[in-house]
Amino acid sequence: MDSALIPRGVKRCPFPQFILFIAIVGAVLLWGVYAMLLCWFKGLNQTNMNDYYGFALWIWADLAVIAVGGGAFFTGLLRYVFGKDDLKNIINYAVLIGFICYSSALLILAIDIGQPLRGWFIFWHANVHSMLTEVAFCLSCYFGVLTIEYIPLILENRQIDKVPFFHHLGHNMHEIMAVFAATGAFLSFFHQGSLGGVAGVLYGRPFAYREGLFIWPWTFFLFTWSAAACGPCFTILVTKITETVTRKKLVKDSAVELLAKISGWMILTYIIAKSVDTWYWATVTAPSQGFSLGFFYSNNSFYGIWILILEIAICGFVPAFILITKKGRKNSTALWIAVILAVTGVCLNRWVMVLQIMAVPVLTFENWVLYFPSWQEIATTILPVAYGIILIAISYRYLPVFPNEPELNPMETLPAEEAEQEEAVEPSGDLEQELKPAEA
Amino acid sequence: MFPFNFEWIWDMGHVVFMGGLWYALTILGIGMTYCIIKSVIDTCRGNDEHHH
Image (cartoon, rainbow over all chains, first blue to last red):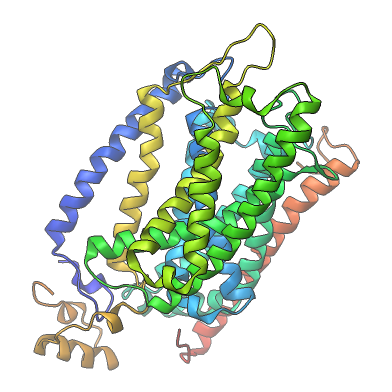
């Protein structure tokens, strides 16, 4: 039915099966949309946020998707600015994943602000003393960059590419993509950093407060570093999941291994810096404010020292050591473990920097305050996941996301397809003649 | 926010924050304008030498 839209040389599932899949995931999406509308029409009383938890599950989800979406800017930087040509085979998917992550982040923020119709206030009535203003600026602009990077991929759809203007537009956008990629890296550096900076400047919260360089606390640099380090792991993880679901090899090993190697070294250097930062905070910064390390990890039912060990040792050093070794990168199981641990680690870091900060008592008469999100918060957090799956499914079906796919998965050519390929060389303009027989 | 808005103050914060925003938007705007104009010209000239 839709075979005229499917890229040449690749095989896709039958259209009814595709629609069924979209419908199932779409039901989850609608559940999230329902919860979102509840939050918009009835207000933030639909959540379990309170005076202790002004930042809650949404902000964790926001920071987490922005961190794992960092794979787009870092891969784009490596590909277009540093000229790592091997990454051309995975850059499309990195951009798509980044686009999903950043649009999800903006969607979550639109729900979180409670009054989305006033979202533009942050641009027009900007509070220039707030790091979150910088985050909003850079986040919005970088989403624009990702859209610009995603558009050429859409324009490469078989039917759209036939329109001369779109064909030229896609080509011309490719030509100057390095400018957009460099702008994206600049924007990402600042908004990733400012998200960390928000925690680091909270001098009233000793669990978060850090010293730093000029106006930037160390968390500013650690957040940017961790996003650049772990973002590519998320790209690899989603690629591996897609390969498992489609039962195809979609990206050459050389591209995955190069990205994994760079990511491994980034994670190793990041986690060393994180360890030094934690050690300095535990032995100098926190004690100077009258707190010992044990205080932040005791007298409550959830936050123990395990979370620190899990974040730094298990989800930090372990994936780093796997990814920097050739043997580790080439072993499929080890690679899976490494990327899962790295992604878990960065998400855990964002959880700690958003929610554990809120839980720790700061006044003598306070106790630990734990928080559990309402179903509306959970549904609206799952909403972007469903949206992401749908967008990936549609893009995978209709766009040449993986340039190596035809080469890695050669098809048996049917006579009708041969005729079609010949026709492609000399287009007749008759669309109906291009339609393949049913499965195609 | 622009300098002609009543909230505007000529200080470092406003210049750096808003300047950064306009700078980024200008690059994106000029880049896209260039691509669109060049594509229109290429289409009118019938250039079809692109392979990507």
